[in-house]
Length: 199
Image 1 (tube, rainbow, N blue to C red):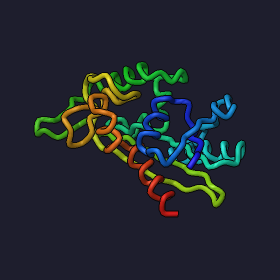
Image 2: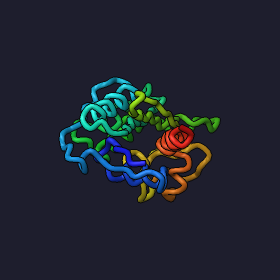
Image 3: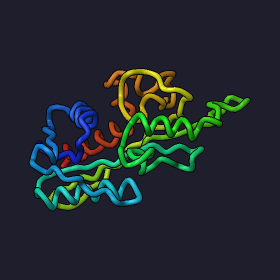
């Protein structure tokens, strides 16, 4: 199945193709000549994903999907949330976002005296799939915590400081296969692929 993925992020594209496998051929808006910024003005992950997918459907009339995902940190009341990509400003710079997150959490230790995690967080992903019969939503979540310093050389975004629940390594220290098997985007993409195969 050929399908448009509403992303300009090569990391996300490669990740999605690895997760979905050879039964799906992903293409991007840029590959189809759409070079403008796809609108993303909603205040929820669901809203942003639907807005991006609808934009591509209106433009091309082809099967397409968009994801909106982000990091929710409990100690920051759910921030950065839907603003994860531009947490440190409109330049959408991973290093700047990471630095701001660590600065905002610098007074909070990883655990309290009883060993309870104090920097709990989760990655959340919503995928909006647009087909002829409308919009279909798929969700994925990965629970974990934020470490006090980055580690590892893999991944992207907040991966260097996100330690998934049950692991002693951060997302950036896992292999692509390990990360995809537990990640928020992996869960949402597998749910979408399963649903499409059963249609």
